[in-house]
Length: 117
Image 1 (cartoon, helix red, strand yellow):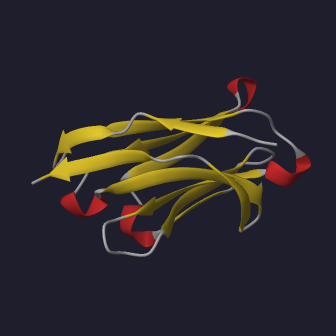
Image 2: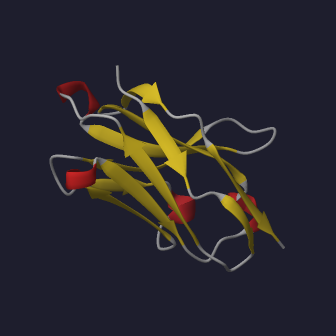
């Protein structure tokens, strides 16, 4: 079993920044990819960013490109999401998940990000 724990959420004003962290209990062949997702009130969950442990590939949803950066620390089994220039529409519960490619099998409990206007 793989466990993921998010941290770093909070309340910030528009234009501010936050850094989310995802601690992954262990890395396995079935958890090569770690992604960040978010679910805003009344909306479907959406993919935000993804990264693999084994390479430098990253991917982002268009709405966060240039503002968010996903990174990893293999030694700490941690993945981060640096969020800059936050907007009220970034308000959501943010989840990290691990899996292979686009198939995510393990999920964290989520951390709330609220951006005030």
